[in-house]
Image (cartoon, rainbow over all chains, first blue to last red; front, side, top):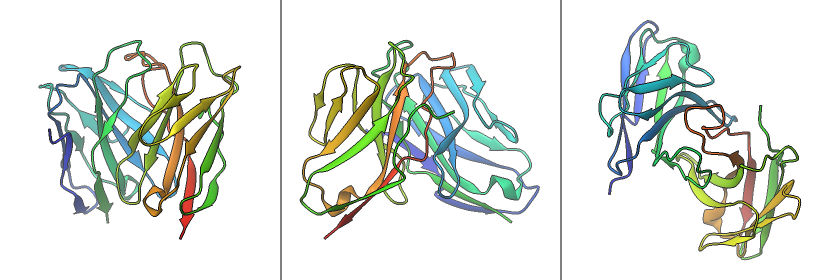
Length: 116
Length: 114
């Protein structure tokens, strides 16, 4: 298994540009999520999905869109990039068995985004 | 709001044991105690989790206080590769609800000296 993969690894954008960060997992996990991590900070949840066709907002959703058309893929879209979105973005997945606190999450290697 | 309290940083010598503390005085009965770590320039990785009893795996041990208001992650012999930020997280796994997501604090930055 490749686990959780993310592309690209690094991206530079200009203010106002749009782009999509890709995330894929091959573990047939129902639950997927996107986090951002700013320097010296812990991870903050942007959006998450409990299954194909179902998404919800996390702690910091503004400026980001998501969709979940397949179990495997969970892309994150920046509609109009802003310097405040400069960060490292991590995608994660888990089996997503609700109510089971023993679930563990698997994280991708991250995408480093710089918005000028 | 982070529901756990950890020291900002700790230092250890290589090949010595390390005890990383975590306080979680408001833990609920459905919360599992999870530990993740993040090596430099990598995504977080799962270390260990437990509910009430102490747990061991190939990476570490988790000691949970009897009242569950605190726990300690134990690395039995620290190596240079163990230098990372360690996150203690309470997780109930109720996907779709407020308890369904991992909430990361700032964690403890562990430095290992050769």
